[in-house]
Image (tube, rainbow, N blue to C red; front, side):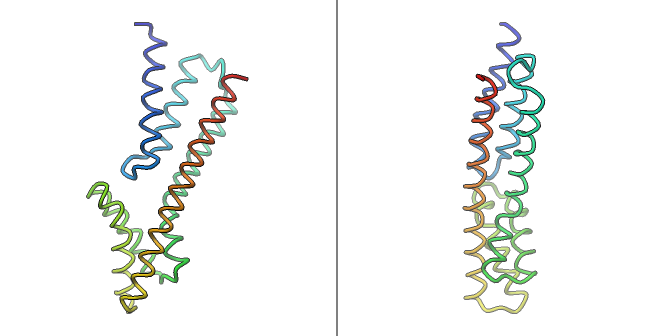
Length: 161
């Protein structure tokens, strides 16, 4: 098998896994997508996609990580969370990683609710903060999808122009 073809196949697989990871919270989708795009550029000797395009793609990948980390916390804050609720949402997100997909979805909610309860808030308020955390996750996922498709579009434009 031609080595360039093998590298391009691997790059394509990374792109597909990265796209899946954008909507599956267990995988770091956009960074994997970036790795696939970088590998495709490298395999072609950077003939089509150069330094500046890769720099922009890398910055977009970093932005997606920040969006991912901050989305649920900002959702909690926007719904009136205390510092304890925000910390709880963050800790719940981290703890949820160990429990797979269900944990990633439930962890921030439970963490925010428990944080609010520890802070002395009533269950109805704590539940609103938990729902705000989920809304933040949904908005963050939508932003990551937009970033991923922006990266793909920029890569395609750079490749064919």
